[in-house]
Amino acid sequence: MIERALVSIERDCTWRAEVVGTLTENPWFAVREQAVTRPDGETLTYYTIDFPAPSVGIVVRRGDAFLLIRQYRFIVGQWVWAIPSGGIGPGETAEQAAHREMVEETGYRTERLVPIVDYFPSYGCGNQQFKLFLADDPQDTGGDFDRTEVHDVRWFSRAELIEMIQQNGIVDGLSLTPLLMVLLDDAGREHGGHRFLPHRPR
Image (cartoon, rainbow, N blue to C red; front, side, top):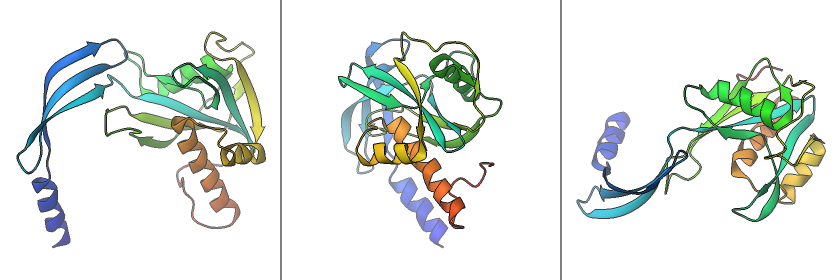
């Protein structure tokens, strides 16, 4: 009975959207004008950001140490510490892109990536999606990282990472979400409680 009610509610609350124009478009995203009809029948104009593919991010960990990269993000005018991340290229899977970005931005590689979470960070204005992975066995390639994008690469202890988060030292949502999920999973494992990431091996 509850399931039927939920289906009825979902059907009654459907929003219908039609793209009626494109304001600008480039290889990374497009800004669309959409005519959106609400469940009550009213039609409104929405402007949305359309991304051709998801982006990936990788939590790189060795024991209780976490690897972060330092970058200057001109859009917000800040130097930030973040996890390695980037877009999925044509013909790539999310996992292939994550392997590539990890090597390019850190100089480390991994044999295995474990999925953490997929989510939409700003579905009120766009369809951008993040696919996050954990690399628990990083191996130094002996090569340098891409210094045109990354200024520094540094290992942080878990205590340092937690303190940084508490002091608002990580302002990137793509980084903050998976880092907190891994830390929460660690707390559950250590205290015999609920494992937040049940499929992640240790």
